[in-house]
Image (cartoon, rainbow, N blue to C red; front, side, top):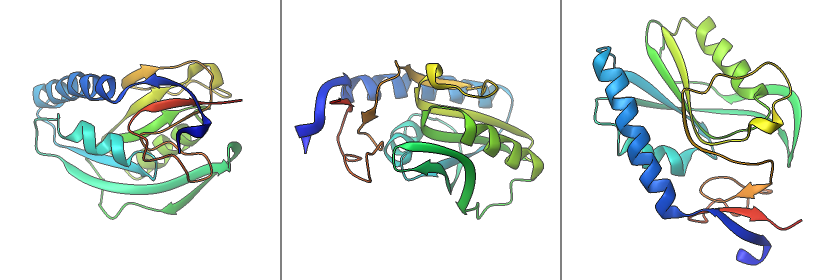
Length: 176
């Protein structure tokens, strides 16, 4: 399984350490404001990160999932498709979108507007990885970022290549 990994970019230990730090920040932000957030994981890639970070948010939270795509294989096609919508009514509520990686920003810009149009009180984005060099349209505002990475193709900890390598316990750079 590790045969396509050129090198490890972020170790499992670094992910856990940074998730603890970020979870404390999220806890403080929402506790200070007296808010109970709905944490929305974007399927499938966010699942390992969501499971890790929510352990470190010391608040009552609600959890829901969406399946949203703008990719065909490894290429972004630009059109956003909602395959699974929320089961929870978000009207008047605070939403934290949890994502594995912010790449072009297309999906998250669309999704943030979509949730705001469904009367979410506040929508913030939390990501394991941010790849700002890949932004193609307007900037996407990311409130909580674990790691900013260069423009390299990465897998592991939920990120995949053709549905493989999601279960690696680290973020690895794929060989070119």
